[in-house]
Amino acid sequence: MSIDWDEINLEIVPVKDYEELCRGFQVSFSYSFVRKNYNFSIPELADYTRFLLGGDPRARYTEYASLLTRIFTELHQAGILNILALIAQTETRELLESFIERSVILPREIAAVLKYLFYWIIPRSKILTTLVRDDPEIGNAVIVLRELGLRTNLDLLQHGITPTGRKALADASGLPEAIISALVNRADFSRLPWASKATISNIIGAGYGSLAQLAAADPQQLYTDFFRFGKGIGKNLRLGNEIENSYRIAKIMPVVLQID
Image (tube, rainbow, N blue to C red):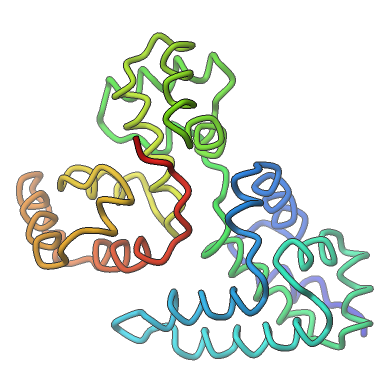
């Protein structure tokens, strides 16, 4: 089966092209904590998707979840055991073409799954400055960490997952451990699908400084705190659903950060 690469690139929009998609996976899985926590088996990925998309209270993703689950079944039947195996079989155009010939799965459906992984599942590399909004102390800390070679959320998580790692970062940077922990938690929040620095800042501003605190929150109190924070900064956060989805997804995400 020949592949219409224009169709593939259209399927993965807004990713620039197939090569950029594959590079993103290579970068993410170069970190050991990503390989450890995100190499779901295909049945695990299907179950996770049912909670992640199927659990949306507005039922916006019901058809999308159904489509993906069907493709996951076909991938498993084609011998794909887990996410890393799928990426290994599709990480170049030539490999994708070969896999399509063997599996007879439609190319655009493979592309749809890869795009889903890219945006909804696998933590993506983000420059640390994109996690900070209107906080000079945290912003200055980002500059210091950059001088130590820690430029992205994934760099920071890799080095700061454990309490020992966070203390080592504080010692090496001269920054207070509280600032290191605050930044590491921002990096952890960035694993939420579609999380912007505004969303991260709003959740933290509402009084929930870590994913663990968010996941453990009482929902009614969380909404009250979130909306009160929005009122305090002159925004009607009731108009969005960021806290509802962030709370729901935080409860099912892989736990990466080790708490003090």
